[in-house]
Length: 324
Image (cartoon, rainbow, N blue to C red):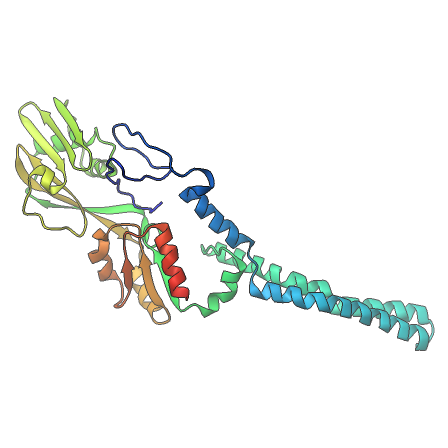
């Protein structure tokens, strides 16, 4: 629901949402909201309401059409009667032509068709450019936009690509083999990313492999041991609060270093934001934690507002507040 790629540790009495993936172990949960009460159902209902709404200009066109159509019909009939009674011969032919001409020129149906046709074409052309507009009203009011509020994951980040940086003592061939062999057994997304990053090494047969949920993993091969995970888990006590996702490594109870994960942002993001800043207030609402705050701040112009740990309903509340 938040779009955050990192697994979140859950404990007894914590809430989970439908669609949650359990990475390790077993889980027993109680359904407290089902059917129309679920978070997903609420999101679907919001979209349905938006799709069924009519833009203000469409409602105005409907009101005008209600008066315009009978006026055109009456004008057409009056025109035919005038030609029929006072026009030259052939009076009937001229009357028919006159009545038809009034209907074709005035064409009351065109007024009713113009608005939905314009909305359809506008939304279609926007879709070709990769812009999805949820309803006609959004299209109509786009010219009045004063603020641009963006999500982070998948919007300004380049899909799920990440940049991984290692800081610490150089790993020996044996240590890197043990690291890769341990990561090979884990389904954690960070483990998979690290595993793919490491160069080809001999895969070792582990004597011990154990996962500690929310902390990390440890393994043994012959006389060598390894721990991979959070700073406290590997025994690194001097680590201060990090602003990025980091995976620490220790071998044989000696701290070796950490792999830091950075989001990869879309090319030209800084240039685009500086251009947008001239006309709009910029706001970013993200479901991720504040780990990317420092990196993101470097890319964005001053006074850009950043909000993290935002649930879907939090984002909606903020937008409603901003609209008021």
